[in-house]
Amino acid sequence: MDLPVMPPVQPMLAKSVKGIPDPAKAGALSFEPKWDGFRCLVFKDGDEVELASRNTKPLTRYFPEVVAAMREQLPERCVLDGEIFVAVAPPGQQSRLEFEVLQERIHPAKSRIDLLAERTPASYVAFDLLALGDESYVGRPFAERRAALEQALVGLDGPCYLTRTTTDPARAEEWFHQFEGAGLDGVVAKPLGTPYQPNVRSMLKIKHERTADVVVAGYREHKTSTPEAPLLGSLLLGLYRDGQLQHVGVSASFTAKRRAELIEELQPLVVPIEDHPWGHWQEFLTANPDRVPGTQSRWSQGKDLSFTPLRPELVLEVAYDHMEGNRFRHTAQFRRWRTDRDPESCGYDQLDEPVSYDLASVLGVDEEAPR
Image (cartoon, rainbow, N blue to C red; front, side, top):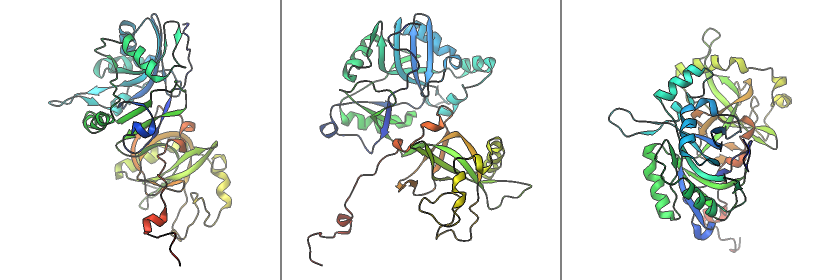
């Protein structure tokens, strides 16, 4: 394989914002649907096709039917950014994206992969162009990349597709609401004048709820847990900042059956506290400003806050309402496991930053009035 852009390449990233951005304020934007699948960079040189995940790991072996389609449908030599997804149509219903079915495709056994390739075939939707023929498009503005992509992928009708776009924010608002029923995740906005920036959050994403990919760093047992029948109470969650894993909150909404399953599944990851990123917090025996796990606060006196530390290797997606300082204000809601994410990639930079607002205005205080 000899392409003008060669792997490994980290994809360009997006930052969460509230609502559809106004191009008059944010600059010229292109809007497109936000697909709910595996981010995938495609490197194609003739019959050679390599698929790489968001964290640059190989995906090629897991999607043989997609690779075969790419050999037939994509340009002879190209590097594309897009998403692999699986659509499922329940009896009597329209098809919709199913992320959990997609996750089943990541399996070590070739026989299983081949079976699922027939039962739940995946598709690919392209939304950016990094190279075509002998030319790199990485340094070109998105407007040029999109124009070239449309010309190169004209006529695709599946299983490889070209995502639709619009520069009309009103149309993007319609998509945001209409496409949710098909399992899409929201809308992405891309500045028309920016180059492709690997591993930089230069895009904007508008989702139907605030979500974050977080690291599972430990767990607490449920209040009804016993040595004979252990039950998980809550998962302790972390995010990375400046290379350090910070405690960001907990997720706790599980059925009794799932509590028993989870505590058993997590046992292989249990480590001594001395080998854990939070081991240095043992010195805190009373309340502290970071509200680290296992320590007391004025609201928790008398409660058992001990936790079982885990190797920080698992990533899950949680929904949350808003932040309070460096932590989730309330218990985060478990959404799904993210086997396609590296723990070290889960940082605070993915979070929606609250809009700054003057407290005096909230309280109706006139700053100029005499006291």
